Image (cartoon, rainbow, N blue to C red; front, side):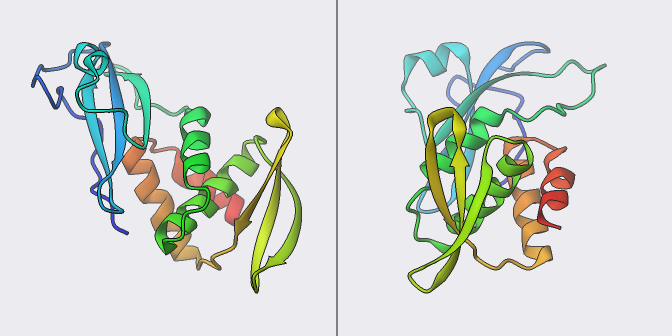
Length: 172
């Protein structure tokens, strides 16, 4: 699975309105034939619901030119993606879910409970205390460069430049 990766756009996909500094807008990921595509919408177009809600979405702001790029990661967006990828059977999606799990362990959203074998494959068992749930995440046995690549793609897709270093520290 390859992603069309782009940062936040300068305008709304539907009405073509240019977004100004500090203006709120919505970004959404759409699963287009097993390919995630990011689309941005002004608040008015988003509220009209014409485009649908996509695979995952979040509300953000156009950064001010004198401020640095966002360094805080919206954990809820990553958690939402993790949940929606449950049961995915496509290799790239399973790998993405594994990398998301590593990040969410690092951020103490999940706790590593144990390792187990499942259908001849190794899985990590995660505890999610907030909802008193457990998740099994298959280990795709990614090489370091594959984790780096997935993390970079995810960071670019979500426009989170700080994600790369944090996930890599978890994987090591």
